[in-house]
Structures are given as C-alpha cells and as structure tokens.
Amino acid sequence: MSYDAPLRGIKVVDLSQGLAGPYCATLLAQNGADVIKVEPIDGDWSRILGVSHGGHTAFSIAGNLGKRSVALDLKSDAGKSVLWRLLDGADVLIEGFRPGVMARLGFDYGAVSARAPRILYVSVSGFGQDGPLAARPAMDPVLQAYTGLTLENRDGEGIPRRVPISIVDMTTALYAFQALSAALYARRDQAAGRHIEVSLLQSAACLQTVRLLSTRLEAQNALLAIPPSGSFQTADGWVQIQIVKDADWVRFCAALGAPEVSQNERFRDRDGRAQHHAALYAALRPIFRAQATAGLLQRFTAAGILHERLNTYDEFLAHEHVTATGAVAWLRQDGVQPLLPVPNIPGTVPLADGGSRATSPACGAHTHAVLLEHGYSGAEIAQLATQRVVGGPLHELRSI
Image (cartoon, rainbow, N blue to C red; front, side, top):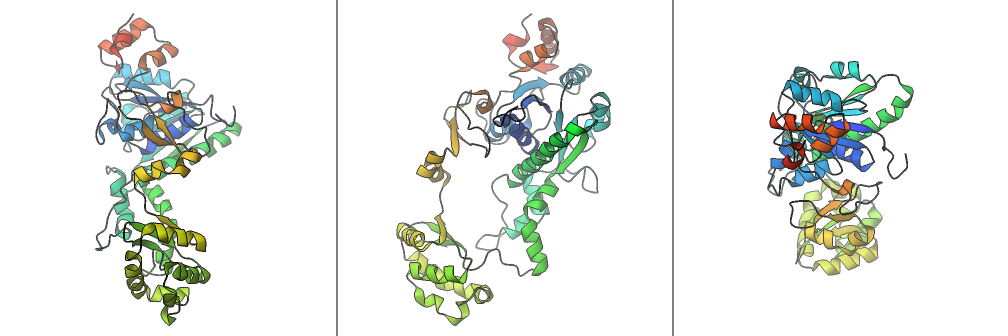
C-alpha cells in the first residue's frame, strides 16, 4: 500500500453499467484497486451512448479507465458459475440494476454475503431500493427534473433546461466512492461487510443542498447569486463576474468605467442590489456590451474582482494554465483516432498515455486472462466462448 496506490490489493467486481456505478469503480481503479468489469457479451450499454468509435464512446471511456473487462452472459447457469468464481476473494461488488434484478439473478446481498461475509456490496439505483418509485427506470436528466434542478436552471427566456453534462451521474459516483472508501477503512475492525445503497435521487438532492435550504429560508424568492453576479455579454464574447462585498461592488463599477452606477441609492448596498436586481442588470448590460472582453479582464484583474471569460472546451484545454498544471492528460485509446483529453483525478497520480490506468478496455478484452487467473483452463474458456457464455478476442478464447 502507498499514497500513489492506496487501494492496491483490493479486488473489485463491477457489474454496473452506464456512468454512475462505472465511474465509481473507475475511481477505485485509479487509486490502485484491481477492478474487473463484468459486462454483457455485447457490451455495457454505455458503449452505445452517443457516437461509437471502435467500440468506445465518451461514456464508456470515462467509465472504464484502468479496469479489466470480462464479457459474460449472466442469464445462463454457466455464466453465473463464472461470476461466483470471480467473486472469490473479492472485497467489493458494485451493481447498478433496478431493485430486484440481482435477486432474480441469484446475486443479491444476502446470497453474496453468505459466501463472502466481508464483502462491501454497493447498489447504485435511480430512485433507491424501496419506495413507490423504486422500480422506475432512471437516467441523469430524469433525476434533474425530479429533484428540481431543471426548473432552477432556466435560460434567458425562462425555459427550464437540463444541465448538459451528466452532473447527477458523476455526483452519484463521487458519493458512492466516498461511502465505499469510508467503509473500506471501517472494515479493518469488522468481521462482516455491509450493503451500501446510493441513489441518483439522494445524490442530486445533496448536490443542491444550499439551494434547497435557501428556497426554504427565503420562500421562492431566493436569488441564484448575489447581484450583479452572473454572465454578461461583451462586444466580442462573454464574461462571468462574482460580487460579494460592498467594497467589491465599488471597485467593480470603477473597473467597468461606470463609477456612477455604484453611487445610485438603490444599488449602494447588497440588500438594495438584491431588491432592485432587475433594474441593476438592465443598467449594466449595455455597458458590458459596449466593451471588448480583453480590456475588461485586464481591469477586473487589476481591481481584484472575481471574474473569468466564458471559454469553450477547446479554449479551456488550450489554455497555458491547464497545460502548466497538468490538469488534463491526452490519451490514446485503441480504435479511436484522435488523442483524447481526460482530466487527471485530483489527489491521484497523473495518467500516463499507454499505461494500464490510462486505458479503457474493449468489451471482453481481458476475459481470457482473468478466467485463467481464476482457475479455468484454456479448453474450458474455449468451450464457454463457443457456448457464448463469455466473449472477447476470438483468437484467445478459442485457443486450447
């Protein structure tokens, strides 16, 4: 064990699909765990989310970095026998099926813990394991809508919009990872493992804790930010500013070239700016639109105002600060033409192109090697492949 790979020696069997459960398992792999991704013969459905490139999509690459893939038919008795063999010595099992599916397959927590008493069994679901909505299918946009996030995120015309990134899935992965990390620490002194339940619903709610509190404390009049914080269109782009203190407000107006706005009685203090926020924004927007972004940024920087230009992803990736800090690794993936930008996970060793932690496997890429490790002979693996119980590179699976 080391700080570079604190989870080395931890064996994880990842049955989850999509993004929330898989990215939790990716975080485990990036911290040194041996993660065996068990996916259907035709692949985890994340492999068809979006445009496919050589059997990969953006979702499947992010959700499988650093894992080993075994393609397995869990509906067959032979496939179930393989899974039991893979679970020998496992510390963690992650599943993301709808409630009841694992029981029907014969791998619910009771069944698995009977054979592996110290296993940490993580269930990731949309609405939770029980309750009136438990059986409903769920994806990130559905939970954004259900928990209020979509209505809170209105565009300039007042139309509710979902956040375009998979924010609930990624947040769920982070909460699952933190719960599992704490459980691994606690298990050192425990004779038994535990069942950890994490849902997109819980995670989306926790993500919005401050907003839920503010709307309750301030009824439905809670402002998204202290005025005049927000995005403003300039003559050639957009700028984001954040004004917190009254002293910031005075310096901001001076840097903007509009000191008279700060002297307006309605806008002198924070309460006044909040009360008259519509008039305030109406006064500031034409001033911003008349000025170039570069000049505004220079003056805001000199004045110590919290601000930033609104960058595209390409502009962000090309920025000298991103390069200097190593925030993003550029990786090759088999079957994918361009180098891919993958953010380095905070607190972990940076990804190295071509390394095992930086590679997302093709479906079943490690079936042969993993089954050999778990006591199967080459002939047995070839027979399982012929029966379509397992999948992977044919030249390996059918060799005897």
